[in-house]
Image (cartoon, rainbow, N blue to C red; front, side, top):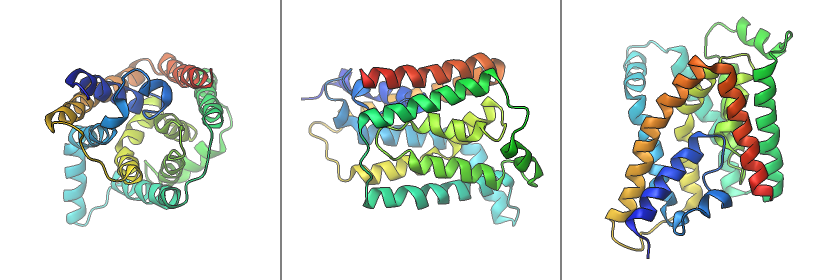
Length: 256
């Protein structure tokens, strides 16, 4: 039977693995807590509600402006990124593509290496950056396409959502802070699809124990998102290097 301590630890670990370039459902993370997988649904709900709560003022402002007929660039970005996530991700729910743990680990290593390379050496000629600058709004439709499509592909088992979306938003030349922030903003679409993929869930014990997993994932997310954004803004280069190295180290741990 699951214990309250396991629920608390599961929520904390899940949130850390969700916002760092890792996979919250990976074997390495789940092996740290015995009943980890039994708390996936409340943990997913916890991180989803935390994102909505953290950005509540921005979401409400964008919605109010839309009701008045003003469609901000960020609202268009959210809409199209969510649309692209669903268009790519929903078919994967219906017809999942088999991918081994080793294959997903290789993908995550490549993601981490590219993030590190972008942090160490900004390309002088970047066609994506030049194209993005020509678009009239920021975030642009290119950012929505890049973030949404890659987030949809993150539904492939083992691929890090935060890592691949951050990479997709770094490629057009955006700062680490913007890449993280815009990636966090569109994450609820991914979480909802994952909840659909998990299917029906029933608590095997008292209802308040899974609630602890929800609460710990919620609170950890509220602390972690602003911390990551602040670190990316203040120390962008070392932060992105560390971010990429975490993805690589996690992937190597999975392969061993």
